[in-house]
Amino acid sequence: MAGKVTQCPGCGIRLQIPGTPEPRTSAGAAGPRAKAGPVKQPMVDADPSNVNAWIGLGLGLIGMAVAVGLLFLVKNTFIGQVFFTGGWVNYLEFLLFFWGLGILLLKSKKIARQRSALLLDILPERISDRITPPIVPAFVDHLDNMPPMARDSLMVARIRKGLELFAARENNSEVAALLSAQSDIDANRVAGSYALLKVFLWAIPILGFIGTVLGLSTAMAGFGAADMSDMDALRDSVSGITSGLSTAFNTTLLGLILAIILIFPISAIQKREEDCLNEIDTFCYENLLLRLQGTSGTGPASDMSGEAIQTLLEQMQETSGHLGQLGSELTEITRQHQAALEESMTGAVEQLTDRTATALEKSMTTSSKYFEGLERGIRSLNHVLGQLGGEKVIIQQVAKKSWWKFGS
Image (cartoon, rainbow, N blue to C red; front, side, top):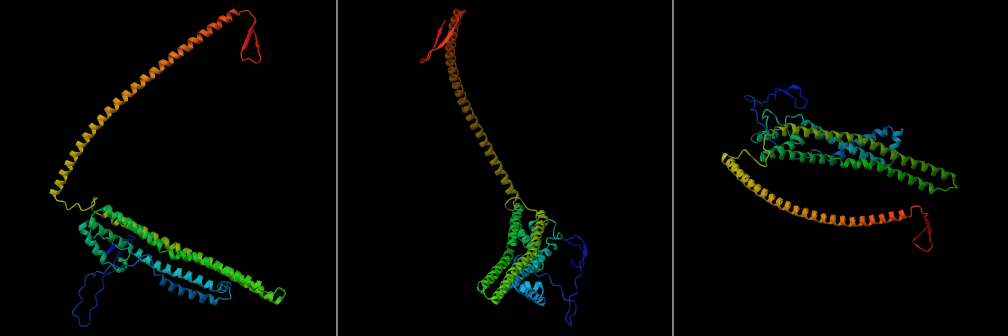
């Protein structure tokens, strides 16, 4: 695209690409040197997320030296006293703090390199607007001819794996599953790259508390060894206690301040890297998956001849006939089972009906006998009451007996 007007793949603005400079010629050359073709370079196998911790330590030592030098210039101020009265604990806190900043600086450069790859035309439409198996080698060659820093990016590596799988399987769903799995792997790798920084965030405040304990123990030890009867010794002991307390509180104060300061750039860098992964996922979906022209099966379908297709259709028809026959047999078996079930249910219902009718008939007979006896008792009672018409009835309860005595 040198010397042409094109559209930026990142922001969409049309811009003029600078032209190719004229090649330099050696003394006595008859003309310009012939233009060399693109040279393919091997893929760089580098970790795009994790950085070299020892390089970060070197950068941290440089930053720590500069910071200590600046604090030495203001040694008599409050900030200088907070640092220089803490002893070796404050120096160790400074070392972890600037070591973490060095790692963040290296990670920031890696993230900038990953985001710069998003501005490249990884799958140019000038090769083809659709990605088919015969076109895949052209796209792979385009990836091989890219600069090493771009070929080292997460996006280019992921797209290359997707193209290679598509060329072998010609299956869109398998490519989508591969890209999803690779996205999870990259996300886990990014999360694991912050393990050492999280250790620093935990260790810096702990060092501050360790300095507090050391300062308090020193102060208490000096006070316990002092002679209470000697005022000069007691004065020196109080001075030692004051110094120990100053050391104790200054180490804790410095550790908490450094931890608070360090957590903000860590969160910002991590958020930026996660956003980069989301943009890579979006790019792979919009520029790779939506342009794939493959099959939905488990292998190539374009290599099947007409005879093979005809054989496949005949086999499918034969299988359909077998399935129809099996369906008819299953229907007949179902009908027979249904008839047997209906016959069995009918017999069971008839038996239950007969038993129920017999039981009801016996119950009615017994009830009729009870009602007849009750009717005779009521008639006898009516007859007795008729005979007692105008008589006075006296009811007397007789002790030690369970019946009533009637008299007139």
